[in-house]
Amino acid sequence: MQHLPLSRLYNLELLRLCILALLVMPSSGVGRIFIANAPFSGRMGANLNQYARAKALSYKYGIQFLLRTSSKYLRQLRIHTAEEHLPENLRLRFCGVIQVHTEEELRQFIEKHDGLGEKREYLCLIVPTFPKKILGQMPEDFWLQLKSLLAPRQELELPSLPSDMITVAMHVRTGGDYDTAASIQAAPATFKPINFYAEQLLRLRELLPNQRIHVHIFTDASRSSRIAGSIRKFLGSDNITLDYQKEGSSYRDNVVRDFFFMTKFDYLIRPCSNYSGFAQLLGNYKEIDTKNHFIFKKDAMASCASSATFPWTLSARQD
Image (cartoon, rainbow, N blue to C red; front, side, top):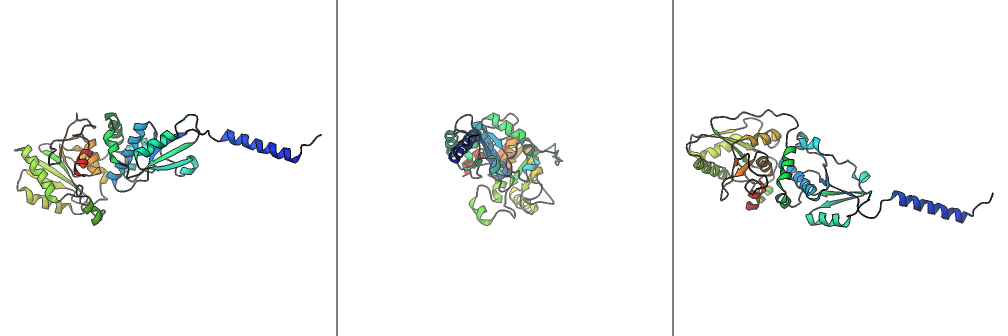
């Protein structure tokens, strides 16, 4: 039996390994691209905003969305069960993971890796600071899909509302024990003074003469009674009643329940807040006074994509 020289054997083995490498390695075009949210930060409103921006990019570019770790708030929503979740160890599945800060970055990445037959998978993480203007570009169909996911996983027991009065949800954002003094000072459109809310109620009373009005105050303040008392001083009228959470009022309590409760009123008064912004969207509240006031009326026929209904129109006017 004739034996091959060691040099020949070495070359054959090297050739075999090269062939195997070509078989198992993906080709040089693109693979599948996925979009996911970066890890959530902040409270429920911020979480919903981060989720919506990543979901909007997924919708716009036809790229599959993966949910990266639900927050304690989103775990209570249909989002948590309806979305496919991202694996914990990204490196085991994806050969490339990038953070996307702008839509241009995402567009360039898609163009660079555009192709067919690729076996590799890439992940684009949409950072929390991604520009919110993407939400203003989305069609009605996107918002209808999103609203179907903004539903509680379990039935919630919500407080009852008076049937013989006009009902108003008022979101008073104070920062509670969560926001720092510096962050509050930096966001005057979010942290409005008490007289702002009183002015909205006085304006609403002008729009609804001789009507009895029931107002429920939603706030992250630890003592809701102080908020109600301060607003009451500006009103000087008995046709407006103020209600609020008597116990357990803080930025930690009843967050998900209050979110859905806020969607059940005839009117909504709110500052620039993602939390009440998404409640506005879900409750079909339409802006009725765009000059100096921030009053929204429930309108079942309102389009989610209209400027009068879209929650971030208000923040654009304020920022």
